[in-house]
Image (cartoon, rainbow, N blue to C red; front, side, top):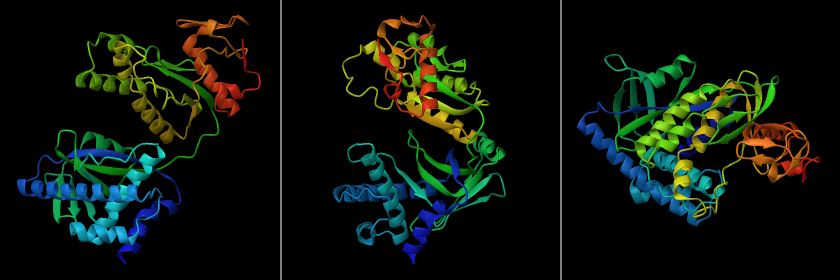
Length: 374
């Protein structure tokens, strides 16, 4: 019976009539009494130990599938840690997702560093709280401690609710980077249909010029001087750049875009250790490429815009007018084609080449029939 319920819990989203967008909003548990704090910390330590055990079992068995954990593994964790079958199933699902993600990215066996557990509707119930707090999170047992956690709302959470997002019956209980207990609320909203009208826009992303769009938009270019002013990379400098980058990204006008084409820079720094000076590496570490892509992906998803990744190879040295590749055509920040005379900003030229890749539906410039070396 428990296995059937868990199957419904995991697979329910696949049968939804419409795809859902999901976001999280964190609320810190600063007002809990000492007894509840101790109970939750003990529960998180137990879940952490079970996750480490399950990850080791799945990795050793080379089980990288998206299927449910087999009953033998579930029961082994139940007997070893004296937990309920339902909690063991939930933790096994979380462990399988970690193992499958690490394997898909070609990484080693994941190390369970964070004390975090996802609690589904069988463990938790969220209700409005009548009193000085806004929400009541009820832990209903099934392996989790039975208690009521009163929580105040936050401006971040209220903004989601005001914008039409619905709170799911799932939370993520854990500890933040400072070790304090917190709860991440899961918010859902139907995904809008993809745009059929608009233009294809290319985006060149680099720490010196910022974000340069093929339609003429140019944001985050003012951060280059600030990054150069930092003596070294510290936590406060990273937080400052993150805050300012978030503000800059809000200036982007998505109204006329139906497809946004960006560079696929995920593996661009592989095998580059020791090839860049220390100062350049410090400056590059302040350019938050992963953060930028995540924010753009969320913004595009909410507006029905397709986000497409293309190869960055040769985009900055290929003429977007005549399609001729010549390294001599680019000098610093200017691009002047030595064959057709076309002249423009080098990053704008790269953005236009990305737009052409989006229009042609190919991954790299080499796939274009008219592309040629000088």
